[in-house]
Length: 456
Image (cartoon, rainbow, N blue to C red; front, top):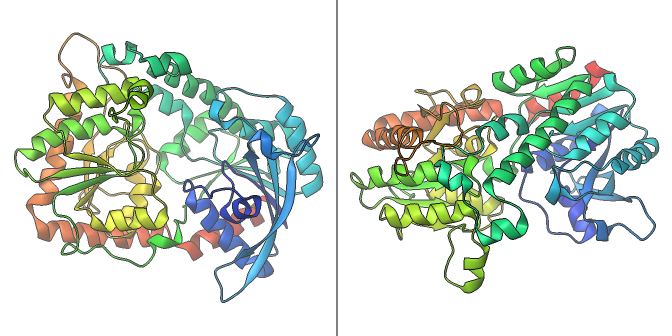
């Protein structure tokens, strides 16, 4: 059985072969690749992988870059190989569709001769190009990850209207204001819906994404398929005696949808009860303003966060940790006193799955598909997120209306978690037990093989 994967990122083994830095995103894809390669002799799967590359990495006069990688499969010295095809795509402008990519992918398909094409995600134009290019729609499998259409609908996440309208010098020069960012997701959503409509088979993992799959393509077969996480998160367990008490960890906060502004407003309420509380956020700082270069590069959202920090008296209470690899992320989860997912919308965030798998106390907004992987009152605390996720209208002060209401519910959820250590520990045990089933690597691999066999 020959299977061609279409991925949004370069698998780590191929990145090393190409002399690139391995991506820390979508680590579950590389984890699943390892499982497929490890079981290839038993399953009969011959894997090849296509992914976007910067144009300068494609040879002169070449339409794509191909090669073969010999990769470790996780066993004692066991190795297996897969073919890769890197095609040129400007992923920094994912809202733009280049029809020439269809021709390139047709050529890759003609060389790989796959029995099945498996596309991971709908967020980039290459998925639509493959869905158009691959003729056997009944052999086309499309995996739903983040969904651009609802992301566009919830993108502003209750920011004040005046913040949405405002654009910094950086925003104007890069044509990347908050309004433009939302427009880009809306354009990606148009391509996303067409791609889903073309696929004969769809995988998802929540009731929420299944609803969208049925709406956009009622004819497609839908397969439930959970994700396996990066290997670093299997094994260690959170210890309340080894963590930093009353510290809160967010896995990212680099655009409004991730809800950092909800957390900052909630933090002011939390500090009234726990004055030593501190917030840690993975990723680069959006609020850096120390040098002239940082002042020129600050975005409209970054400026709004700075205003919140100063206006709410939160200076020194938040720390941006920079880019973290899998091991550093694991260590930060284990060190925190609480993990919070405060997004305006999510499908099933792997960050929440990682925290659950490690047995970290978790609080999450009840939005999107989260309730399919995280049971409120059992695995941790779910609070009601935004009712609409748009911009907050009217004059009012920052935090009035829905932003203030969501932040208040988030603060109360955090305080509730910290009031009762016995209940907190029960949540942690339950969450870990739940995640060990959801993210069971052997079970998820077997399910993938079953899906492929059923499609054939």
